Image (cartoon, rainbow, N blue to C red; front, top):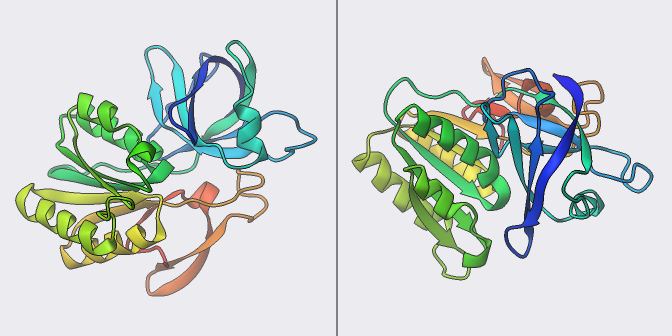
Length: 259
């Protein structure tokens, strides 16, 4: 973890509600793992004094570039959209614990909305290691589906479900997931972005004896473990335990998360 400045290479909308920011992170001299995040100073410290945690969407070690995919929702992310090429962003990171890949077998990734950002980074790493990756993307509308083409380009098999098409119910996603588990040699399942899908993945991992991991989302203040604003509860060794998403997570074994 370190605090550093990064120059913006690009910052543009990718849909009506989502933007992508690309940064030159030459100042970063630490490895970055899928599932980790950075704590970002969004802009005006008077109007938005707290940093925002953004998960790694893509990190290129060779070019030393870092990409974030973010939902424009509040004052902080609204200020981020005002940033231009060559502007400077201040970051703290990389922070938290990331995903772990299985030694063998295919991966099933289930994402809702901007939850695909952190799972996209995982898909890229898995494909780089020549592992088979199946991704179920869920969104409100087809226009809200993100990274479909990019995931297909790296060799992942992508399935899309949406609310408007009435294909995104838990029942429908369960049926599709169970079909993939049976037919595609799935050994591990990962999720981010939806409580109802988190519960589904927890059930699937238990029923089919799969390795499972969940990237949790939480509001944060400090991002480095001091304030406990992001505290959540997990179950470990048959006991409930309070942990911090920023330092103990954000990725947890799906079996430990209390949903």
